[in-house]
Image 1 (tube, one colour):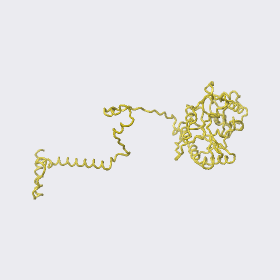
Image 2: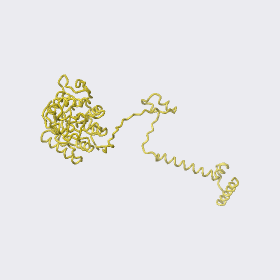
Image 3: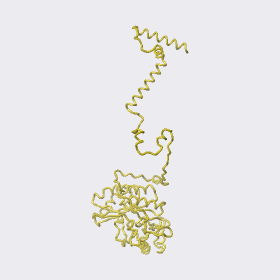
Image 4: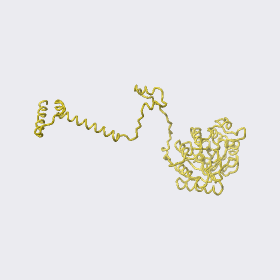
Amino acid sequence: MLERSATMAMFSKKQFATATPAPAPASPLPDRAMQALANPYVGAGAAAGLLVLAVVALIALIGDPRASTPVVRLSLAKISAGPTPDGWREGLSQGVQPTVSEDIFQLSETPIGAMGEATITVQGARPFHAAGPLASAPLAGFHAQGPNGPLPIIAANGKTPAEAYARPFVPNGRPKVALVIGGLGLNAAATRQAIDILPPEITLSFVPYAEGLQGWIDLARAAGHEVLLETPMEPNDYPDNDPGPYTLMANAPGGETVKKLEWVLSRATGYFGVTNYLGSRFMTSDNGMSAFLSALRGRGLAFIDDGQAARRAGPGRASAIRIIDEQLSGEAIDQQLLAIEAGALQSGQALGSGFAYPVTLAQVAKWAESVESRGYQLAPASALTTRR
């Protein structure tokens, strides 16, 4: 191998002399350096070095092509001028690994995707919750301990829970339109969507069987929404359609109706009234409705129904003129919302109700963006109840 290398070196020198008959200028390099450059391996190494230098220079001019986000470099001397944790410089200089703390997020065990529903995004929505939160529940003087939990009571000064927990409202003389969106608390994602994307003037109603019910009500009130509790009532097709073990039955004695109602009411605090869940049969029962409304009146609560109640008189009462999502399409819901506007023009106010379906939430959020520009005032449902 050594002999072959020496022969190749000699052959290279001979070629160089033949190709260059004129005397070569004196080289400033020593002879040993010239001999090293003549070696093909050294020459290849020098070429590779020049290539590396060229790449480094190119990156310095145009930046690292692998970088996809801006990088900010700040002098440590400038950092030290501001407020920093003690020992930060020593930690850097000694190579100490930083301590990492983890935030834990509790996710729903039944995400909205598992139910075949869709996440709702409303583009360009206004900051609905700028008006501020409602007072945290429970408010002092408006509840007493019952056999199953706190029960609402009328305060010593005569103020009712319906007044204390309702969203404040100042009419401006325009026709009032209001909506109640129900079925909340059972599906975490849908409930959070309703709280977040709907304006605080929209009233939210919660299922009493929901786990963590008080937490949901607290979250809704913190976002400015007033709250109703849903009372399960006997429908015409019961028991094929069964609203659960605390359903108010049409033919039950008054004492049983009140007992079941009090279980529902003791599930949480912070609501200004109740609304019906189903109830097409119960709400036609004179005995059942008499016991129900009497118990609500004694506790200072409002009752807002979805339009099925035969009795519509009495304090703290309001009835919806439309269920907006009996047909689950955006166009059908829009038509029902327009019908509510027409009802408000005719009567000075109108109330609608709906369920927390994804399409309902999306359509209501878009409708709420423009309804006031058409000459209406968006109001909480409590503002449409009769004088207490």
